[in-house]
Every structure is written in structure tokens, then in C-alpha cells.
Amino acid sequence: MELVLKKVSKTYGDLLVLNEINLNINEGQIVCIVGPSGCGKSTLLRLIGGLESPDTGSIEARGTPPPGCLNPLTYIFQDFSLLPWRTVEENISLVLEDHSLSAINRNEIIESVLQRTKLTEFSDRWPRELSGGMKQRVGIARALAVNPSVLLMDEPLSALDSQTSEILLNDLIELWKKQNFTSVYITHNLSEAIRIGHKVVVMSRRPGEIREIVNIDTDIADRKIRNIELEEHLWNLLKDEAIAAERELENG
Amino acid sequence: MGKKKYDYKPVPFRGSGFQFKNNYWISPVVFIIFLILWHVGTTIGFISNLVLPKPAEVLIAFHDLYVTGDLYLHVGASLKRLILGWTLGTFFGIILGFSIGLFSLVRAGLAPIVAAIFPVPKIALLPLFIIWFGIGELSKVNIILFGTLFPTIIAVYGAIDNVDRSLIRMGQSFNLSWFSITRKIVFPASLPAILSNFRITAAIAIILIVAAELIAAEKGIGAYVQMAGSLFAIDRLLAGIIILSCLGLIANWLIGFAEKKLLKWRNL
Ligand SMILES: Nc1ncnc2c1ncn2[C@@H]1O[C@H](COP(=O)(O)OP(=O)(O)OP(=O)(O)O)[C@@H](O)[C@H]1O
Ligand SMILES: [Mg+2]
Image (tube, rainbow over all chains, first blue to last red; front, side, top):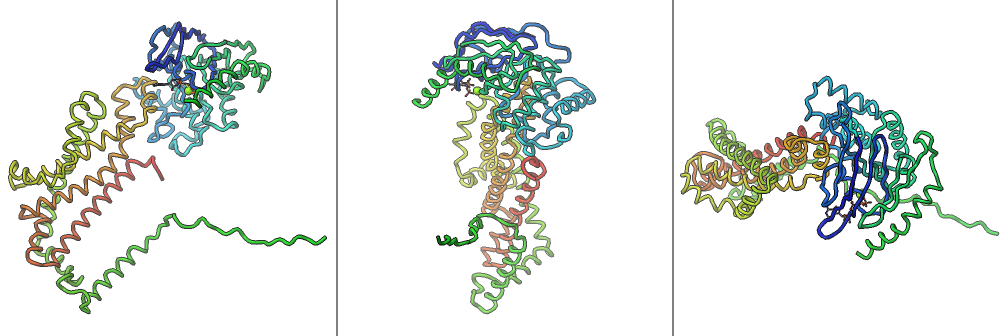
């Protein structure tokens, strides 16, 4: 599935948060969004997934979702958003229960996503018993269970320590190599964006506008751990914005 | 060059205290010491028999209650009113609390009324209830119903207001139905607050039943205590008070048990 954003704007009260965003999210591509704090990245993602509606402009989904897709636009959350009163397995089951699936079918799906996220042994644990990395694996497993056509991720790794997030980033890359999912991936971490993105969208400070879109042609499988040159280029784009945004917050 | 002398001292441990250990044997020991002091005090006359009877006399009062069948009569009457009133009050409280918590129209209509009635001490309504419902069972059940209803409504919709919005967002993002979100996210999230409110309403129910039975009743623990008081039978009075304390403890234990079963995801 492909997403097309045309002149999307959003205001909260009289605060213009997003200003005329035009963006294409192509099938099978990961689009990374970076930008200073408070520039409206999370807002943009909520608009894309239909959790909020834009004031002006349009967001279109083109193409049909894959067969067996239960929820085309699916989120992976920064704070995991697991239900503490459900075990790992039950948390995944939650998103399947509203669909008419046989119990056997449902268990097959759960087993399969647990395996893909290396959680099989932890299926009957409570969320409080898991480390942050494990919790986010559950979040990823839950998203995979509905066989989404677009994965919407808002800083999925930023609540984790750097080693864990490195491991999970690699897992996401492996997953993409197998499934070629379409994704919008918000991050603060430039090297993360360069590792996993086909496109890196750099946003300006509020009101959020697209400053530059950097295409990365190297195959995701062939990328090095770091690409200092590109990172510096992105940082130069962001630096002034970030400093200005920081000032704004300081002065109220 | 002389060597510097060092003074070796272990770092003192300062982290003790402010921490509860499980000392299961302490409370029975304290209880027994208390009984012994009571017994000795009343036997040697240090405590006047007009103030406190001997522990043995209270025991005899209990024995009398048991053999005459009055224990069953009084406790049974109070329990019936308590269980009926509390269950109805809690049931309607949860339904109304959920309606106020979930539907803004209901909230706009009912929340102000609830807020207005909630602070009225329900004991003050007792004379009114007796006029309305007579001095029989109905006024007693209703006063308990009323007394538990309002705290429950407020606790339930407060609990719903406090449900983590991000979890509801999550449910919406997976296209869960309104009913699924309510049943699988909102309800379990508010359950801890609802259960801990049970402790408060159980205590309120016991206060109200005693008050109602003190005023007008032939049966019930309140009536028994009232009779004992007017006869200056302190031994029976104390027996009644001990029964009330036991009722409270049992209610508390039942709620603790429910919490352990229903909220096992919280702690081990
Ligand atoms: N529901 C809302 N009501 C009012 N203002 C909001 C709301 N959500 C976000 N905002 C404001 O919109 C702006 C953009 O918020 P948003 O969360 O999208 O930024 P962000 O780019 O995701 O920031 P960060 O990098 O810190 O996550 C902020 O100034 C925020 O205060
Ligand atoms: Mg954000």
C-alpha cells in the first residue's frame, strides 16, 4: 500500500503545528522522519494512522492491503502500550479477538509472531516481568499479528538503552528484508535513520514543514553501521533548527 | 621520607529502618499480653468493674449469645441487611459510575447531582428514610444502599477518568470495537480503584447498619448493643462491639482475597 499526503496542515488551538506537508510513502519503503523536538512528528504520525484528522489537506491510502491483513495502518509505540493485566500472549491475542478467526487460526498467528520476535519462551509472562527491549518486542509482535501493510513507528527504540536498541534495530532490518513492509519511522537518532530509511525526511521546527528529503540508495542489507558523511549532512540541516527549538522551549 | 599513616575503618551501614519485615508472631503476642493485663487489672481491682468486666465475663456473654440462639438471630439480621444493601448499592454504583465515566451526556446530567448528595452524612437521612420506608427492613437496606451508592459512583468514574489514555489510543489504533475497549481496557484498568473502594464502602455499610439498628430495631447487632447499653451490661456491650470488629475484619479479608485473585498481574 502507498500513502500520499497532500498539503496536510494541523493546528491545535491557535498553534500551527504542521504546515502544508506533502509526502509520498511508497510501497515497501521505510520513510524516516527526523526533526527538532516539538516540530510535530508525532502529530504527523497520528494523522497518517487516522487517530486524528488534518485541518486541511488530504491523506490517501492507495492500493489494496495484502490478503490476511487485519489492520492496514498499525502502530508500534514508544512507550510500548502493553496491557499490564494481560500476559505476552494475551496482549497479542487482544488485537485478534475482534476478528472472526478460529481459535486454531488465532493461536497459529500468535505462535508465528512470537517466534519471529524471539519471544516464544516468554509467552505467559506479565509485562512487568519483561525488560524494556522485551516489551518492545511484544509491541512489534502485536503489530505483526495483524499483518499490517504500513507500520507506523514513533521512536520505537528511544526508551531502550543503546545496546538493546541496536539489537532491535537489527531485528527490524532482518524483518524488513524478509517482509519488505512499508513504514513511517520517527526517530531522534540520525544514525538509526540512515541505517533503516530509504528516505530521510528532515523537518523544520514548528510550524513543522519539510525541509529536505534525503534519498538513500544503498540497499539496506549493505549499509555500514555508520555513515559519518551523511550523518553530518543531516546534522547540519538540523542543527540550527534544533538550537532554535531548544531556545523556544527555554523562553517558554 | 616517612610513610603516611592511614586510618582503616569500615564504612558504617546506615541503611536500616523504614522497612517493614514480616513479623507474624508479634501481633498474637501483643494480643495475649493485652488479655493478661486486662485480666490482672480487673481481678486486682485496678480497673473498676463498672468500667470493664473481666475478659471471662465477656466470654460468658458470648456463650450465652450462642446457646440462646441470639447470636444467629442478631448477626443474621444485620448480615442480611448489610449484604443486600451493600450489593445493591455497589451494583447500581458501578453501573452509574461507568455511565458517567463513559458518556459525556450522562456525566453532564448526573455528575452535579452526585456531587451534591455525596457530602451529606447519610446518617442524617435516617429519620427521613424511616418516614419514607417505615421502621422495617426497607429503611435499613435503603440507607446502606444509599450510603454505598455515592462513594462507589464517584470512585468508579474517577477510576475511569484516570485510565491511561495511551492504552485507549492503542486499542483504537488496532480498530478494537467500543465494547472491546470498554471491556478489555477501561474495565480492567479501573478495577484496582474499584476494589479498594470496596473497603471504604464496607466500612460505611457497617457504620450505617449499626446506626439504623440503634434507632429502631428488635434484631441486629446494633439493637443488641443498644439493649446491653440500656441495661448497663458492659460484658454484652463488649461482645457486640467485638462482633462488629470481626465483621469488619472478615469484609476486609474477603476484599483482600478478591484483590489477590483479580489483580494477580500487579504483584507476586
Ligand atoms: N493534543 C494536543 N493538543 C494541543 N497541543 C498539542 C497536542 N499534541 C501536540 N501538541 C503540540 O504540538 C506540537 C508538536 O507536538 P508533537 O508531539 O507532534 O512533536 P514531536 O515532533 O513529536 O516532538 P518530540 O520530538 O518531542 O516527540 C507541540 O508543541 C505540542 O505541544
Ligand atoms: Mg513525538
